[in-house]
Image: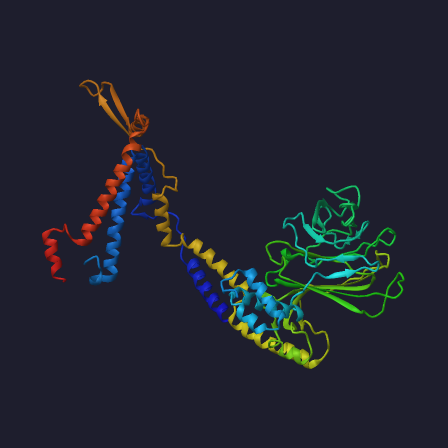
Length: 88
Length: 497
């Protein structure tokens, strides 16, 4: 009964969160600019380009991997501050 | 004498010789090999279990009135789990033996039933059915193998359609009193546990059936109302009682002629609650009960009671009456005790109430937990589309090209004027980058190394990927170690040291 009650509460709060927040399936328009359609078209053209020239796909992958490293570094600095091993 | 490393055979001879000389202590000391002691202890424990009744030392053997020995394997394992309902049973009779059988509830109107009859060590297999419907049409009697020491025939009579409510369906001998060629006495009990239609809150955990019989001094066809002189009790627990599949168990037993009362109870310990023994059997011993006397408030799915009669000539006679307890009735059991002693009943119930209360206090209800987990799982599945995670999911879909984002490259058209006047004709040049790039890519893919037949991509892509990987690794390493910082950056960082 006790464990069931705890599980009921967890289920209740999770359900509250999922039912109160809106469901979004596309990116929003900002100042009339449709980011979603722009990204869909842009990424589609990029895919078209990289499909033809495979070194571009590899370079893009390497670029995003490096960007991911810097993002993680910035997050670590944001959270840990001066105690971050990534510097400040 | 023999060394301790002597061969087992030599050791055995020496031990036996020493035993004959009544010097058992010396023999025990000589049996220094660990395996001898282990085996001896195991044999003692096994014997104690056998003599205490915890282990059946042999197969139950019934002797028919005609003096024919019938071996019965009490537990029958279904040979399959599909809807074709395979059954297996074992039995052995003399030449001309017949097991007359009918079924109650009409479970197998149109489904083939596979019976695996065992005679000695030989299995006889075949596909048979009980009804006259498709696909087993034409007759209601099927012979398995009309050879000596085989189960010969099964006579089935359809009595109706299957019921999704019935949890126990029993197979009783057919009324074959018109048959005069039966040489043995036989009886079969079958159970059909329709767990698919039950609520998960009531998980069948045990199936108990009891057969009481009496062999009358002189048999007369009709209802026998005398007292039962003996009881055969079988308990089946956890056999095909899962909820996912239609549970099925069938057991057969060969009985001598007499009057019988057959009862079966499908018991559910609600949500898996197990019945506890009465404090390790202490209270049971006080009241002279069986050590396996159990207590517990359980739910009785269904209870069936029938009476039937088997004649001296070995065939089933008489009528069958049924009484059924409705599904889901909560019944307090003091299993193993059928008396009316209030003290015993109280000792049964009170500990169960306490332990049950404690259990339900701390152990969650399986159904409720599963419901909660299903709800949470559904919520988490939907959470990827909830603000703001929905934006992340959308970006991920776009960049992973799971959306319809395959677009062609833009076409550029340049218009040229021919001549110096504005009203003169113009012409245009259109540049389709898609065609150009695709053509270039195709061209690169179509070039092959004449020796190894490799394309430029096959040759150079590993090198490109290697150089990119090294570049990334060196960049990250240099950033972490600070080996390539600009002088002003290095100087600015020093103030934080």
